Every structure is written in C-alpha cells, then in structure tokens.
Amino acid sequence: MSAVPTPTGAGEFPLLAEASDPKALRALPAARLPELVGEIRAFVIEKVAASGGHLGPNLGVVELTVALHRVFASPHDTVLFDIGHQAYVHKILTGRAGAFGGLRRAGGLSGYPSRAESEHDVIENSHASTVLSYADGLAHARRLSGEPDRAVVAVIGDGALTGGMAWEALNNIGTAPRHPLIVVLNDNGRSYAPTTGAVATHLDALKRGTGPEERRNLFTDLGFAYLGPVDGHDTPGLEAVLHTARALDRPVVVHVMTVKGKGYGPAERDDADHLHAVGTIDPSTGRPAPTASPAPLSWTDLFGRELLHLAEERQDLIALTASMLRPTGLHSTATRFPGRVLDVGIAEQHAVTCAAGLATGGYHPVVAIYATFLNRAFDQVLMDVALHRLPVTFVLDRAGITGPDGPSHHGMWDLSLLTMVPGLRIAAPRDTKRLGMLLREAVAGQGPTVLRLPKGAPGSDTEAVARIDGIDILRRSPHRPLDVIVVAVGPMAHACLEAAALLEDDGIGVTVADPGWVHPVNPALAALAARHRLVATVEDGVRTGGIGAAVTQALQDAQVRTPVTVLGLPPAFIPHDTRTSLLGQAGLDGPGIARSIRTHLKRLTSVAPPAGAYAAGSPSTGRTP
Ligand SMILES: Cc1ncc(C[n+]2csc(CCOP(=O)(O)OP(=O)(O)O)c2C)c(N)n1
Ligand SMILES: CC(=O)[C@@H](O)[C@H](O)COP(=O)(O)O
Ligand SMILES: [Mg+2]
Image (cartoon, rainbow, N blue to C red; front, top):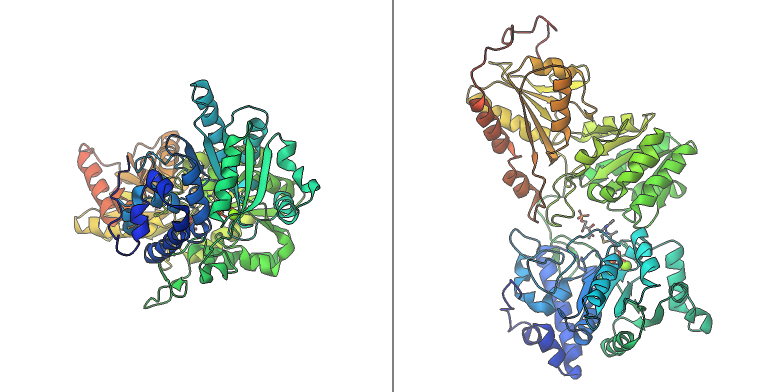
C-alpha cells in the first residue's frame, strides 16, 4: 500500500481527498470530473511552484491520467510511464497528494515513480524510451503466468518516441499477441522544444488528417490497431477510447493530443519549453521567485558562451544535442549558426555515431549531453568513435551528483565507464577559466576528448601557485610540504582546498594538485606522489573504476609505493536531495575529505619516510610541489 500519508489539506482540495485512490476515483460520478480536474491542476501548480519540478508535462496529462485510472484498475492492471516526470497526477490519484510538500526533497516524494512509495509505481528510471520494452516484457509475463486479463498500459511521449529503444519494442510488440498491451502516445508535439524529425512529421500528419489515408499509418503497418487522434483533455472521450482499446484483441496505439502546460497561461505561453521543469516560481506569473541577487552564470551558460566563441573561430565545429538544446547550452550557437547545431531527438546513440560520421567527414563534432544519458551510448563512444580514433569532443553536463532528480539522473558513472576507453582523454575544469582553456584544448585534439561539468555554477577562479609538467599545484603546505598530496578532479578542487586548510590546522601538510586532464593519468603525478606519505584522490563520480582507481594503477605501474586513498561516490543508487547535501553525506565536502585523510594517515603504520622526502625539494626533481 501507499507508503505516504493521505492528503491532509482536505479544505483546499476537497475532491482530491475524496478521490484519493483509484477505487474512489472510479466511484466518482462523471459529472464531478471537471471539478476534480480543476482541483488537480490547481494543486499541481501550487505544489510545483513551491518546490520546483516538472510543471508543463504534468499539467498536460491531468485528464489523461484521470481517465487511465478510471478505466484500468491499478495495481491489478499496470500503468507505466516513460521517463516518469509526468507521473505527479498518477501519484495524486494513488494516495500521495499529502506528500507533495516534500516533492523532490530529502526523504520526500520522488519526482518520478518509486516502488518504495507505492504498489502503483513500476519504472523508476527517468531515462527516456524504455516504457514500451517494459510493457512488452510485463505483458508477456502476464500471459505466461495465466493472467492475460491484467492489462498493461504504457504512456509514452512524442519526444520519447524519437528514441531508438521505443522502435525496438514496437518491432516486437507489433507481431506478438501480448495484448492487452495498450500504448498511449501522449503527443503534445514537444520534448523541451517542439519535437522534430520524421516521426514528428508523421504524427503531425496523423493529427491533421481525418481521411482513410491516415487510417493506414506507421502503427497499423507495424501490426497495431490505431485509435485516434483523440483530444487529450476530454475526460469522457478518453475513457471511451481507452475502453475500446482494452476490448480489442491486439496491441493498440491510442494517439492522444495534449498541450504541455495545459490550463496554466504562463506555461502555455512559454516559447522555450512550456515550463517543462521549473525551480520555485511565483504561481501568479510562472517566473522564478524573486531572489536578493541575480543567479550566477551556470556551468552550462559558461560552456555555451565558450562554444559560441569557438564556433565563430572554427567552421569545422558542429554541435549535437539529443533533444536538450537549451539544457545543454547550445541555443546561442544554434541561433548564430543554425546549420551547425544538430538536434537528433532523444537519441543519444544516434548522436554519438552521427558525430563519428561527421568526424569521418572532416568535421569536429561537439556532443553536448548529460553525463547520465551518455551511459546508453557507451558502445558508440567505444566502438564508433574511439576505435577509429575520431576527433569528437563530448561535453558532459550534469556530471556528478545532480540532486533533486534522484538516482537515474546523477551523472556519476561516466568516469568509471570512460576511463576504460582506449585513446579517450578526459578533462575536468575546476573553474570558469579552466573551462575555457580545457574546452579549447579538447576541440584542438586529434582524437576523442571529454569535458565534464557538474550541475550548478562554478566557484571563483583559483590560480595555481606552481605548475609541474601540466599539473596545477593549487596549494603547498607552508610547514610540512610532503605529508599528503590531494589530486582533485575538476570542481572538487574547492573542497580539497578547504580540507587542506583544516588538515594544516592539525599539523598535516597537504599539497593540492589539479591535473586538468585527469585521464590518462599524467605521468608527472608519479614523481609527485613518490615524495608524499599519502595520495588522496577526490572525484564526483563512482569511486570504483574512476580516476582514483586509474591513479592507483598508474603509481603501481611506476613502482611508486605511496599509498592511495580514493575518495568518491559509492557504487550505489543515491536518492534525491540537494547536491550539496549529497556530496556532504558522501564525505566529499571539505570536512569529509579532511576526515578521510586524517583517518587514513592514522591507519598508516609508522614508516620511515622516503629518502629526502621532507627536505625542501627532492634530489630527484629539485622542485617542491
Ligand atoms: C535518455 C534521455 N535523454 C534525455 C532525457 C531528458 N528529458 C527528460 S524529459 C524530456 C522530454 C520528453 O519529451 P516527451 O517524451 O514528449 O514527454 P513530455 O515532456 O512532452 O510529456 C527529455 C529530453 C531523458 N529523460 N532521457
Ligand atoms: C526529466 C527531465 O526533464 C530531466 O532531464 C531533468 O529534469 C533535468 O533536470 P535539470 O536540467 O534541471 O538538471
Ligand atoms: Mg512531448
């Protein structure tokens, strides 16, 4: 049963309290549905304005979700959502309205379906285009286990339908009698921006057409019954077509036309993305709640600015996005050079191998993509780009802990994956200045390169006090120069500097080094490490197989015996919370790093320091770090 309290604000939304579970919803007289829909819409606006979250997508599926839960008896029947960012109404109707005060906050309601929250939730992964494959398997399981009457309903957006996995599933479902499998295509014509490509063009034709030629379409050619297009804001009409779909004897696509942000002027009028995802906003205007000072430029803004400069200098630069033009900062380059920014839809695998094709044709592609979404294109990076040593630059936004979007959105896997790729060079800028420098170096590269940027805004620029063979030395201990060397990966440099100051107070001397290019490991690191008692590596990524592991291996290969303590994220699914809080919980803030280093030093048996280790400068290099 639902793990969260039922609505308490009955006075504000009386019908929500009455229709707080699918059974109660089905008992509600049809005449009261318009009132319920109105309450749900007002509730979503109020709660999302207060907490931030996905506003446009959820306002677009109010009537659809009401109809789904009136026609199908969850959890006997199963309603699946692709991505799940549009499942707030589903959560309201399955007993969780009372929990929206904690939406996307620590310990509160997830912004996506969550099996721990409810028996009505199934898909927790927020990566697009997976729902039809889940549905195919679940419907097959229902048939095998003698429960063919338990319907499987898969809600997929027009954006998610541009993902290749969706077509792999359609290819299978279309020929198999795994009915009742009902595909509900929630077609609002948009991902963030208007959906483009041949599929979108076909859907538009279906939405416009009423003649027989539209009866025969891509879906019917693939063996599906096709019902629609239907008005996605007409609850009775939706109920009728869903009953029809259920009664059919084969898989069916119900093509539902919705408006992203329906019923909320600021969303419907928003040209950028119909308020797809918002922070806290003033519900009366839809604009961000006024803050004392203007928000600083984010990593994304800064990358977008640098890329535009580079695109002005180099005609061979082509940028690619997988349906996230604005979220990855490419819009200014796209405006200035429309022919040199490709939006391939939610199709990361295609984006990477299309980039390989562009590079083969003599261009230098820049693939801008959230780190978590690159996971699904790993083979394309490895075999379509790196195997051919092609000059493609990947700019991974949201690399590391992201925060409120939870486990499938943290960009924490890229370093462990990409350090395996032969010939791929990985850079992590610590601040704005290094972002510009490293991006320029990356696109100047002859082979594949990666730049990873976290969510949020950079700290202030931090200049090095020395530079040794490409390694920035950000801090030397004034008193005991050779106790610990901390190797910071990108923006973790700031927490490392904080930790170093704390350790200095304990009489522990810390050198803080920032290689910039973190993989392959800079050979100069071995000489630096050899002159310290302990090496600590700090990365905003899974610690298994990441930069720490690579440094450990590099020192072993160089026969340097200095022990290494690898500080990073556990190989675990980390829940939603703020980025700051999650990094702190993982021991990746200043105090946490200092604590780990202190503990490791204590654990070290008293060993004779390496010859000349503490002398100012070392006989081998003559330079202090
Ligand atoms: C693999 C993957 N790439 C990118 C995203 C980022 N993303 C989240 S929602 C969204 C748009 C989805 O559009 P659609 O499926 O039409 O749903 P709508 O928001 O219109 O309801 C995108 C691109 C994602 N979740 N998964
Ligand atoms: C589901 C969805 O839209 C995600 O891609 C996510 O919301 C992105 O969030 P940010 O762009 O705010 O990191
Ligand atoms: Mg859409």
